Length: 428
Image (cartoon, rainbow, N blue to C red):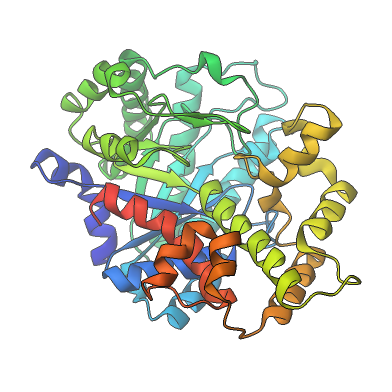
């Protein structure tokens, strides 16, 4: 293993030894988010974990159009520009399983999942979240734990064989699925529950048996994380913060399975003290994605207002107007997630914490609209009063000279502000 992967694999041992041990998992394929994460890691001399989901990146291209080798090349190219050493980079795959093909019969869906995980492992991804919990077209509505574990072991065997063939690093595994499927939750947040301790233990036990039956004891020895629900989530305008008292019994499970830490999904927008408490309690892998692109959108919209002040042009389409046009023309990525009145949907399209707008930034129309904005601002030194007015969250950093008052620097700074919160919580 590389030094970074080895440090990651030892995360549970460091926690058991009393060290503050955690890492943020950056779940985004946006170039500016990737750039910000790698620049942030380079400045702190820290490892960086970047993950792609099964829907985002797969052997068929996913919604980004990237295969796992493409994504690796994309990230490494940004690492080179950022001066970030690739030996400190950990690449992960999230929700690796049949989810993109669950409309198919299980055999066909798992065949695609196997091809996907082969591509991830062959491309050198070393952190694999195995998620086979979703029912396929010919499955019962709810899968038995044994079926989920057997399918996860089947995919682990494919990953192990791919590494054997390609000669890369043996991956580290994360198991468990106590989170919404990729794309987000649709249910109300008023009945969010913390994973029951017995359910977390059973997840470990059934996976251990399934891996053992498949002759994968060595691979299971590299399983370090269990995905559970610590009681955190966010909706369109709501955030459910971590309440340590509600997770006390779940946290105690880690004493019985010292090989593992917990992986917490949907930690976006958590208060700083909540993130600190999550890491303290053993939720050592903190997933963050929408908060990063939400911060990016805040900065882009602020810059659009600044452009209207510095270079007024009534004929120019503002970025919010352009994005509204683009999202209305292709509603599939937001419509079912925002079941509200037309006026409420208009607000949610742009400002929801769920940040469904992030699916539109890679489209050619959105890229052109963004580039037009950046071309207008160019290398203009943005006056601090305009930073205060439209990017107030960055004003103190600009005043202190830590962020230069240029468009690109302000975009990176907005994302970095979130990364700083996670770095503080994880001790990186």
